[in-house]
Length: 58
Image (cartoon, rainbow, N blue to C red; front, side):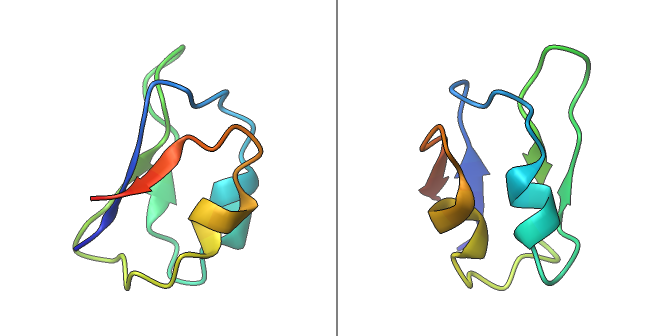
């Protein structure tokens, strides 16, 4: 199951830079980034990289 980005997201881009699949994209202005569940391979790189602990297993 793909990871989810919560409202704690500070839109810093750290997770996007760490995703080996390119599954993370910017959300609407002021909104959390988004993870494409079709591209996410559940590697956990985004979760461990997030300084806000805004990413959870979905």
